[in-house]
Each structure stands twice: as C-alpha cells, then as structure tokens.
Length: 297
Image (spheres, helix red, strand yellow):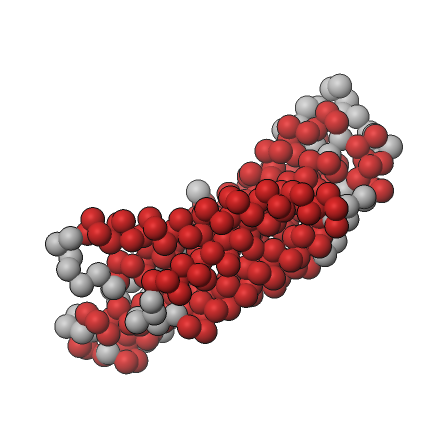
C-alpha cells in the first residue's frame, strides 16, 4: 500500500500546470511512503533470512533461471497493464454520444479481447516451443513481438486511428506477452527444489501482479502530468471548452505510453537472455546440492 500510494501521488489530471513542479510537485507524504515501502521490504528480507521456517526461502534465488525468470515476469506484468488500460481510455475519449455508453463498453470489450484471447492462445505454443528450443529463446522472441506492438502504438496511435488497427496492435502485444508465460513459469518452477515448488509457483504470479501494480500507480502519475503539460502548452485556458483537443492530446499521451512499453520490453530482454533450458545450477539446487535444507525440515 505504501508503494502504491507513494508512486501514485499527486495525480490531479484536471490541472493545466505547465510542469510537474507547477502542479505542486510531489505531495509531502510521497517520499516518506516510498521510504517506508523500501524499509518494509528490507525488513521482510532480514526476517526471512533469520526465521526457522521462512515464508520464502531466499536461498532459492541462487538459481539463475529462477531469479531471471521472476525478474522477467515483473516486467511482463508491467507491460501487460499498459495494454489493459490503454484501450478503455482510447475508446472512452473518442465517445461522441455520452448518452450511449453501452456501445463504448462493448467496443472496449471487443478490442480488449484482441489482446487477451491471443495472449491466452499464445501460451500453448509458448510451452511447446520452450521444450524444444529453450526458455530463453521463446521468451526473447515473445518480448520482441510485444516490443514491436508497443512501438507501433507509439508510432501510429492518434485520435482518428481505426479500431481494426488498434486491434492488430493489441493482438501483436498479446501474442508476444503470451509467448512468455509458459517458458518463464517452467523456468522458475523447474529451477526450484522439489519441496519448494509451491513457493516457486506462487512467486510467478506474485511478481507479475507486483509488476502490474507498479505499472498502474506509476503510469497514472506520469500520464496525468504529461497530459497536463500538453494541455497547458497547446490549449491554454481554453482547455475546458476544447473537449476534442483534450481528447486528441490524451490519445497522444497513450501513444507515448506505448513507447514506454517498448522500452520496458527491451529492458526485460536482459534477464530473459539469462534463461537456459538446462541450467546445471538449477538442477543442482533442485537436488539440494547448493541449497541446505531449512533447520525446520
């Protein structure tokens, strides 16, 4: 909670301040909350290292496949949320008849299905391919596809972009992210010791959710401040009366967020390249060679 509130601080979207500083900068509670979040994380690590029966045995992170897979999954969660929030905003800012929001909701559902359905379907060949060419290659390939989709969003999204083009971009992102699900999960779980498989499975979901949470709170702040700056520069005091201009600038910010998604995918390539199909260190950890059993076992 401390991290989410701290990252999402000062999100007054309606302001027309020209910069983050003019909008008031960070509120006084933001930095202390972020510091508290960091302190709590460090305290958790210390406690987990000292207790007899830890919730997460931190020694499993000695495995390269497990650590690299979880870090990759964190970035995947961040990018996934970009796709999930961009489409509803795009559709809603382009609604012309506000009395018929049911059609807008239907359109959001259809366009989001262009992201989620290919994502789910791509997980199947992702698992098949990872057994044949390795976890790392499939994950890297998926990230490159998602990167391409996000880059196309940054290049082409504008107020008048056709829905079919939006659906194509969402499908490309969905297939790319979907291809990473199975190899990342398999790499993490197969790298865990036999008595820590449940913990490893939970960590896969947790890290993805953490990435999604960080994405929402961070992007809300960045996008709102960027929109405020553009409104002040291009619309000035007429922002309230120029609804279409405001909507066009909103779509421009969504395109810029697409570039951010591409950048995060590029960063995720670093840990993804560390994944190996047969990581000898992981096998050793799974046998217990390098991971002493906890005192409580």
